[in-house]
Length: 450
Image (cartoon, rainbow, N blue to C red; front, side, top):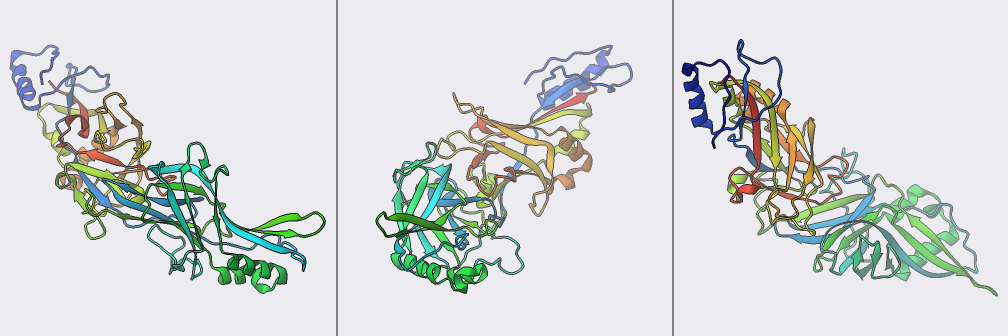
């Protein structure tokens, strides 16, 4: 594209190399303030260039902690880009505190599992979901040398469910079709209730010693029916077994006691993704990095299913060899979700960060200005983007040279506080994406001699 040049005290001989630069790079020169730069008495100009390609790939990072998040994630949904996503929760259940006094006259009534939604969700909430609950057959101890549970961990459980419920959830209103506010209740078998009621009455070590009870009851898992996908919902970590009984008499006294979560730090969510038949099916443990040029010029971000986006700037150090190059003044990066890949059902992450990474695709330190807030173009969808000032990073990359930039770059992540509880995802267009308005963009402003 054309640009206007402003010269001060230049001879016609100095004009020729400037015209060569114009012809090669097709740049513009906005007026940007800078200090302490120049060539003798001449004041340099600022050149804008956006022709450096960004190498974009999707990387798979195996596991991450999902215990101690204070959120149970339950459900299953189908994403055309990211596959069938399923989340199942495991919870350690303890004895009531204090233990109730059960007498010869007390009468058992029923037992229910009670869960409360936290109003977070991802997917289609218009569909009926079926949740099932089973008893664990193994105590919830951390495996091996682990000090936490991870997204790919699981605990053996009885395949015969204790109970189930079909329910439609309206998370934004905090209501369910059970018409009991934000609460979901699952009826448990009376055989279980009577067994626990008997322990409360007799009060052996099994019920008075929390450690013995933990080995006796072991815990619960709640999981979605695989035939009824719709959404994944967030639930508070206040799940409980509520046992109902009454004291007979002239006036019947209704009572209840709760077997609640005994260890909030061990409760965890197992999250799995079946990507068969989707654009992300070829990135996995066996193929942990997939170049966007072989995946439709798109890369895929969903940290909760282990997918991240890596950015390399392999040719950026060539800028130092430009005949008019003096210094980097500013570098901005725009990451653009591909139009048509997101919707109110498949929301974009509201915030994504840029962190350092290398050949091993590890997540390093976050860039000082590496937080990108989402800007959505609701009218046309073509200007939806995350924008970043990466001036300091590009200045360092130019100094470090091509061998470093061929292997070390940036990785796109969601904030640490929500990456293991949020399903929001994005499809990122690379520099060759067919929708030009959705291509990733690196814009550099540098001080020029000419």
